[in-house]
Length: 231
Image (cartoon, rainbow, N blue to C red; front, side):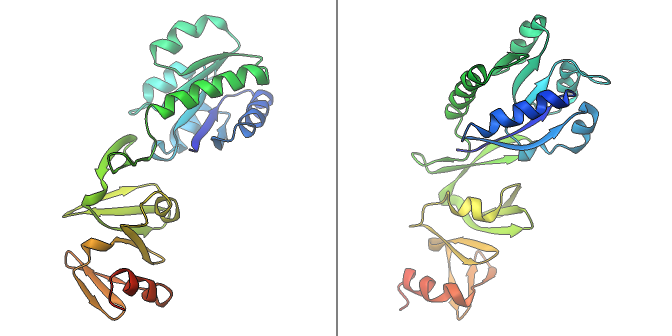
C-alpha cells in the first residue's frame, strides 16, 4: 500500500523536516510540497493524492479556509505551532494533529494512525469481493471486476470500459496491471489490458470485445493464443 501525500505549509525549514520524516515511512509516498496555499489550491489534482499534511496558519489562506474551498476533502493531517486548533482539526475529521516542532517518534505514531485509517478504507482492490476501487472527481468508486471488458492507457490516465460505460481515472496502466487477477486479465498491447472471457472474436493480431477492435502486439500474441486454448 502506497499512500500518496502532499505538504502545504509556508515554513520551508519545517517542510524539509517533514519530507525527511515521510521518507522514513515505507507506505507514504511524498508527491509535492507547496509553500503557498493559493498555489496549492490551483495546482493540486485531488484524484492523484490520498493525504494532505496541512498547516493551520498560512498567509492569504489558512488551513481551514483552504479546506473550506475544496469541493472534495481528502484525508488530512493538520500541523501547527499553535495547540489551540485541535478542536477544529478533529471537527474536520483529521487523522491526526501535529504540534510543531515535531519529533520523528511523534511522526511515526502519526504514521501508524494514517495506516490504520487507510486499512479500513481499501485504497484500490478488495480481492474478497472482487471489486476494484477507482478515484473519480476526488471520490472512490467501486467497480466489479467481472464487469470490466478492457482497460486502455490514455497518457498517465486509464479508461476502464464496463459494458457500455467508460470510466476515466488517474492511474497508470502498469499500476493497475499489478492489481488485477492474472487468471482473468492479460495485457495484450502496451496500451490495452483485456478480460479474457470478454473476447468475442480473434483475427490474427486483432481481437474484438463488445464490438471494439483491440490490437495485440506480437510480443503478446503467443501467450494470448495459449490462454485462449487456440494453440
